[in-house]
Image 1 (spheres, rainbow, N blue to C red):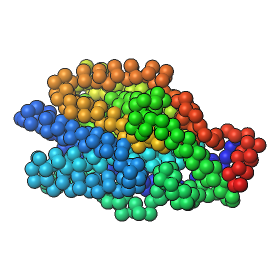
Image 2 (image 1 turned 135 degrees about the vertical axis):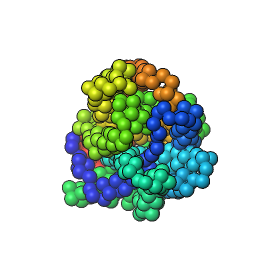
Image 3 (image 1 turned 90 degrees about the vertical axis):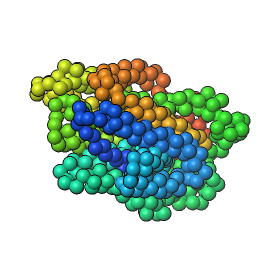
Image 4 (image 1 turned 180 degrees about the vertical axis):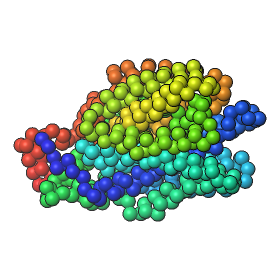
Length: 486
């Protein structure tokens, strides 16, 4: 039957949008010199590779720490800690007096982003109702690319500045603004109801659930009561199962359904990154396609603007319409294979030439690549990993999954500048081959999670569900409500 949670109130929207602001800390700016200048291969390329490698290493370290911290400190406090790291990392980079200080700031900013990319989707998922979880959790990916978009336009604007010192320091200083805003407003952000119940704080959990679920169609707050009851019963059931293994850390290795989720979560993040590393080197790619002067920066900014304004919001919206994470992910990777193949062919055939038509086709397919990657993969990678783990191991599972993302980016971004310089377009064969292999893996092994509560998703992995709320018959729902309300 249809429930009143087809509507989400203003309070719920505002909380989701504000916490999703943490995604904007992803914004980066790379002042890449033109290829062919003295010192490009021996100095600039290794420096870029190291900066990217340290950023990803910071994210990897933070994602592992979050496996423990977001349970110990809670979701909101972990976000606050990440904000502090973001301000510190941005300050160190923008005021750096030498390369070592700059690289230290890169690592710390990477830790901020790593923590945010774990905790923010986790929090948004736990605060969302099943029917709108795609759109609400999708806010993380929307704000993530919005940060990239802002940094690209800042980079384009600074291109025309006469003050070269300002040209690289200002974009890095701007990174401090989103975490400062989020940190300042975070005391007003409600704590996760699921975390509160796991800590025995039932009364506060009720307040957290009741306010965003309020609706004139539900004067008795039945939906909030049902959700709280389901959370309590599922946590009690899962706690009994975890007790058999001694700790959640042992359970994720020894319990087959948990182990399957850990592998799928890791590969979801790893796979999306291996299919989408082009964002960080858009300027370099446009230069290879014959664009000169400010045009690579302009194209890069326009490219990311289409993602921030069109593709990622569209993907988040589609998730609640298509109702299949599985299908969205497969469409995305099929599109990546086609668009990257054509783009690579254009670079191989026309890169470095004056053939405007060939280079224009290459630019077009870079935009089409992002349409598939942004719409169908970028939203799915965070949404899916935020859904598939039960509350007892959610922090461990999401942290390990995001470690997969940063492990892949360490490999790709550390090697990409050197690979571009050494083998050119052939580097994209790695992306194409991986995506071809990954498509059937998704098709056969990724369970569907759409339109189920976080507690009910366990049934897709073979686990027992304590209380069913989705698609109850009228008499079943009446009986359940009478039991809950006494």
